[in-house]
Length: 584
Image (cartoon, rainbow, N blue to C red; front, side, top):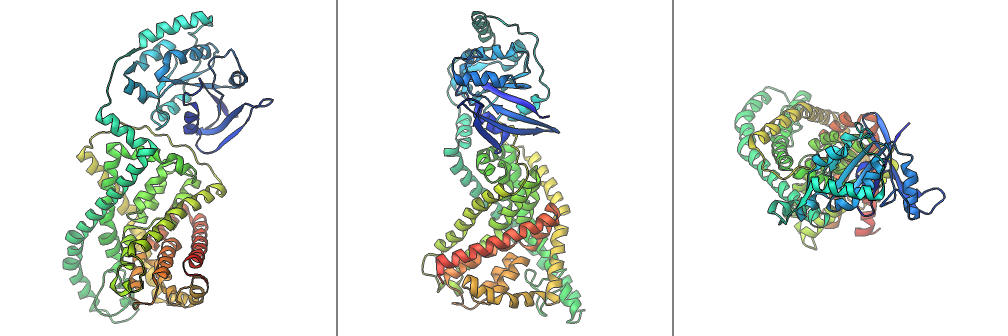
C-alpha cells in the first residue's frame, strides 16, 4: 500500500506550492466526503516507494473552529507522515500548530518556507538549533523556486516520530514558543545585496522569463560564433589542406562506378565535402567539421550555465510550463541543445526520468526545433538573390511566420501528447545553488568529458546515417520516392511537384534540402510557398543522423510512433498553411 503524506500548515504559507513541487501535474482536486471543503491529492515516487500526498486545508490549530479546520483534523488521522509548512517570516505564529502536531506521535518534517524572504527582512533563524530543540527535521525552503525541495524529499524516508514533546495546554504551548524563538532566531535590519537582486529577478516569472529568453539568444549567438570560428580557422583548413589531397589521390584510382559513388561522390568531378555524400568525404566531414565545432561550443556554454548556477534556475523557471507538456523543467535542456544540433538535443533526453517524458521531448524536438545549420539556411532562403524578386514583404516577416508556427506547434503538440501518452511525469527535484563564479579548469574538464561522450555515442551513428544515404541514392530509392510524391505536393500543399525532392532530401540532410531548394530558378516559388516548405521541412523528419540516434534512444516501436506523429502533424500544418496563406 502507498504511504500517505499530509501537508499541514496555516493558511497562506505556500503549502499548495510545496504540494505542487512534490506531485507535479498529476493532481486530483475534490470535495472532502460529506462537506463542500476542497482538498487536493497527488502522488510521488521515491525509489521503489509510492506515496499519496494530500494537501489538507489551511488550519491554525488542531482544535477546529470551522469546517475547513475540521476536515484538516480528519485528514491528519490518515497520515503516515506529516509535512508541516511554516511561513518562516512568521515563525512565532506558525509554531503553535507545529507543537500540536509533534504531540500526535506521528513522524513530522517541518518546512521553513519563504526562506529567501527571511534573509531580505533581516530575520535570522538558526534552523539547526531549531531542529535540535524540536527533535525533528527542519528544512529551509523556497517553494516558489524549488530551493530545498530535494533536501525535503531526502528526509521523507528517514523521519520518525519524536518522543520528546508531551501534550500540554494552550498557555503552555505559547510559553514554550517564546523560549524557542528566543533560542533560535533574532532580527536585524539588512539591505538587499546585488547578488540578492540578481537572484530574485532571474527566478520570478515576470522578470525571469524575458531574461531567460535574452540569455538563451545570447548563448546561441556565442555558440554560433565559436562554432563558425572553429570551422573557419581549424577544421576547414585541416580538411582542405590535409585531407583533400589524400582523398583526391585515392579517388583518381577509382573508376566511375558504384564504388566511386559510394566512397567519394554521387557525381564525378571535383569533390564537395558537403554535397558529395561519399562515405570518406561527406561521411567524415559532416560529423567532424560541421557538427563537432558546434558541439564543442554548446557543451562549453552549457557547462558555464551549470557552474554559475543559472541552469537549475532556468529549469525551475519553466517547470510549470513544461509540466503542461508532460515534462518537467529539465525539458528545456534538449531544446537548448537542439538549437545547435538535434543530435546532442536527442541525447539530452536521457536527463528525463520516464519513457513518457523522453518520448514527448524527442518528438517535440524533431517537430519544432531547427538546428543552427538549418536556421542559418532558412534565413538564406528568404534573402538569396535568386528568390528576392518573389518577396512582397520584408524577409524577416516570412522568417517570423516560420518560427512563430514552430513555437506554437511545440506547445500545442506537447499539450496533446501529455493528454494521450500514457506514463508518469514526476516532479523535478532540484537544489538551487547560489550564483557563483565558475572555475574555468573544472568547466573545461566537464566540457571535454561531454565531447568524448559525444564522440563515442553520436559520431558512429551519424557515420551510419551517411552510409544509409549512400545506399538509398545508389539504388535509386530517392529518385523513385520523389516522383511518387509529386502529385501530393500540388494537391495538398499547393506547391510545385518538384518540391518532393526537397522534402525527401530533408530526411537525409536538412541543410542539403535547403541547398537543393536554393538551386531552383528564381520565381519557382512564391514567398508564401517558401514559408510552407520551410515549416514542413523542419517538422517532417529530423535529419537522418538525429533519426538514427532517436532509434537508439527510444527504441524502434516508439520511434515509429514518433515518426507517424511527425508525418501527421507536418501534413495537417502544411494543409492549414496552404489554406491560410494561398487558398485553394
